[in-house]
Image 1: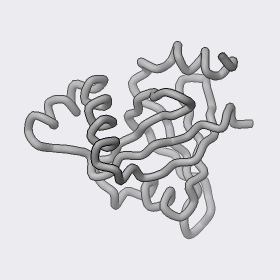
Image 2 (image 1 turned 180 degrees about the vertical axis):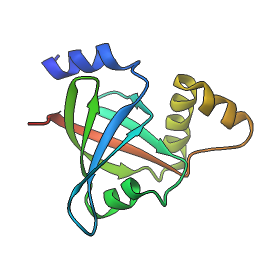
Image 3 (image 1 turned 90 degrees about the vertical axis):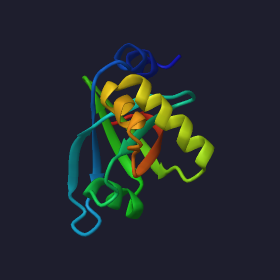
Image 4 (image 1 turned 90 degrees about the horizontal axis):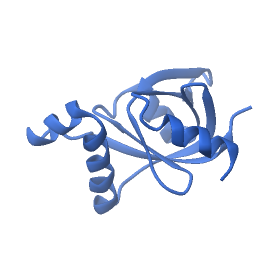
Length: 124
């Protein structure tokens, strides 16, 4: 197991991470806190209630992102999950970690978008 993977395993219950994208118009870094779950094989999953937010729109233009979880800074490529079975699995994982998402799922509220970030390694 790579050093950053060990750190990530220890941080996976952290409540939020910060995603940094590149502005689709300006190219400047744009960072926001977001809920996340750690997947397998270098994957981290994210969800958003509004696809109109800046970060999902930035990812559509430039999928390169960085994630900060605690003191761990990771670099990766994000993609919108479109497969319904894969999306439902990720939504379930988010609902298992976050009670507000779990309650929302009972009320029929779901993320508008679910993203997979394939981690390349630690950001430099």
